[in-house]
Length: 185
Ligand SMILES: [Zn+2]
Image (cartoon, rainbow, N blue to C red):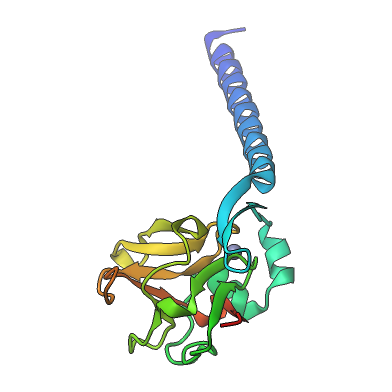
């Protein structure tokens, strides 16, 4: 083996090594995702009036496509935004709880809903801080705080600092990301 052949041999060995490492990492990621699915999380339940333990609900994108309508999939899984003033729950004033349309996790109580004039259902606080997660969203060249469901990590909307008292927060939520469940007064 001359020097050139040796170099080719070493390069091939290194490439193979990296392919093997990457393959292993990809498999490790997949198994991590499986572990996540079985993870229990603590969330607040309006019907129980207390915190409950529930399974994290992680699905593959092809599974979500089967479970959701194409409009729901676009907003909940592709971080889309429904057109302002088109949402079914925008003007809803009934007493109840707004749940995640993808997994049913309780998100907002009707008492925290207010008319922001933006065209999207708006709330000044979530039902409990454990029921939603905030993720930095750097799309469109600005950093916004994206709100996702803590149970299934679907996209809900964004939170802004121009809301009313007592929190000063405005949770701007896509109506299509929510389903409403009436509660007895
Ligand atoms: Zn959810």
